[in-house]
Every structure is written in C-alpha cells, then in structure tokens.
Length: 112
Image (cartoon, rainbow, N blue to C red; front, side, top):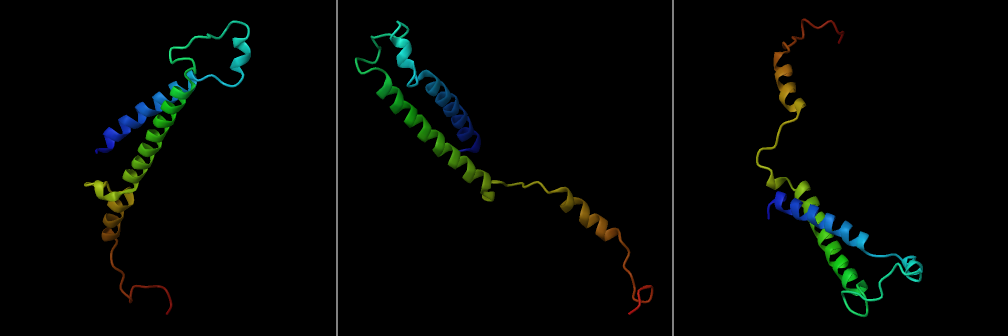
C-alpha cells in the first residue's frame, strides 16, 4: 500500500481510538449511577457496553499499532524514495571546492 493510504488509515484509527476511550466510563462512574445519573438499561444488553466497547477498543488499538509500525518502516526504508533531494552541503560544496585554485609546492609559505 501507499504511504499516504496508510497515513490516512492511521489518522482515522487515532481519532476512533480517542472517541472510544472517551466513551468508556471509569471506575468512579458507578458512584454517579447511585444518584440516578446512570442508566440501568443498555443498548448492548444486560451485561452493558463494557465487553463490546473494550473489544472494539482493543481492535482499533491493534490496528493503530500496526499502522504505526508500518509507517515507521516505510519512513526508514530508502528504497521507496526515487528522487532523494540533495542536502545543501552536497549541492554547494563541490562547486566551492572546484573554484579553489590548486596550490603548487613552490608557492607555499609553510616550511617543510
């Protein structure tokens, strides 16, 4: 797959993972349910949404890790880059070195 496609999937998985984590309730949320803040009935059945959301979160997190590793591998692999840009030193240094006149041994002021 292309680097851009994996990057788009990675961003979508990251957003989904954030949304799933924010949807889950913490251990302190049970105290609020005692005063009528929580709903006794659930869309996901009598067991609640815990098992479904936890499994979905684990699957999205696994996909996120796989895309992270894939992007890291593709970023360090140089075979995918066809036209590697040259650095400033690779472009400028050869031109500067070729402009320097050659020095003869007779013109040298350095004692031998």
